[in-house]
Image 1: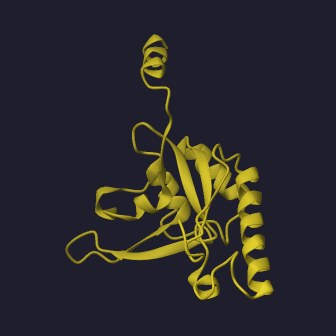
Image 2 (image 1 turned 180 degrees about the horizontal axis):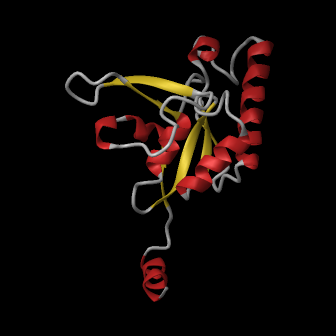
Length: 162
């Protein structure tokens, strides 16, 4: 306990990672759960473990599990809607608890298919602007349900500025 308190005084910062970081070098990780091919929302990375091994698939919850094995990491940032669509707050919360992680932030990523031409909040089409507001509202709901320490981060990538 004394060592932990001393370490806290030395560095009071909490460290986190964007979830995307967990999709690389799958050959270095041996999952301990079923989260490699399940849980609603998942990305296919097509990474080879080496030799003739089959392609490995890693679900969003599998990436949370993997991040939980990184020493010193306490927070995870999710991209919305990419990481969270198809999942439930209960499932994500359970995976976070199992990995001993908390949510740093929910980061809004505007899908290019809808927002690339004309932007999101600056789009001349009122329906597209409304969709942008709805997307951010959805991210806010997730951030609240997951108790995101940093709230919501909005990246206006298609509105012409950073």
